[in-house]
Every structure is written in C-alpha cells, then in structure tokens.
Image 1: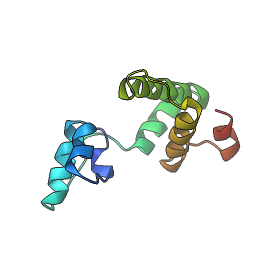
Image 2: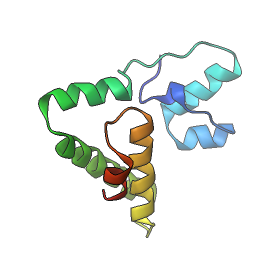
Image 3: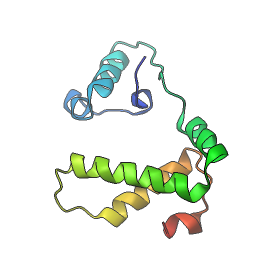
Image 4: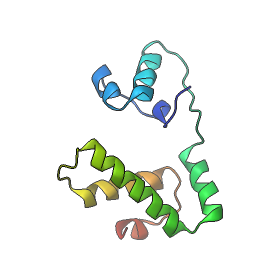
Length: 109
C-alpha cells in the first residue's frame, strides 16, 4: 500500500521515482518485482465528489490550484516557471480524473 496516488504513475528509472518521494520509490520497486500496489487514499474522483458535496466547484478548484502552486514552488525551488502552462496542465489532469469542469471553464482558470 502506498499513499499519494503513487500506484497510478509509471517511473522511467529509479532516480525519477526517488525524486518524487518515498511512496514513488516504493511503487517503483514493487512494480519491478510484480507486487500488487494499492493506494491507502480515496481516488481523486472520490475526493472531488466528497468536497463538491460541501463546497461549490470554484472553491474546490481554487483549493487544488493553491495547493499545487505551493508544490510547484517547492519542486522548482522558487525558480521561474511557466506558471500558466503548469496550472493549465494541472487543471486538465483534474478533468481527466473526474473533476466536473468544462473545457471552456478549464481554459479560463
């Protein structure tokens, strides 16, 4: 069992897995040995559904974008990045994982 959806991502080599943290490293090693992986966390779709029962879509989207912004700052050591492109890609990924947002809404986020 791993956390953080590490069971959903493929890593090209051990160094790329290690760079993403201990759950990713464990997932990499488990796959290498054909060990079944399961996340201890609910799926993103389940998380979205739960939050959307309590908060409106814009608040939930804002929370995810702000959380991701902080992660980008840490990941890139506060070096300049194409923030708009990164966030657009992130929102598109949210859509792919079941966040109820239209293409038009996503492009204006």
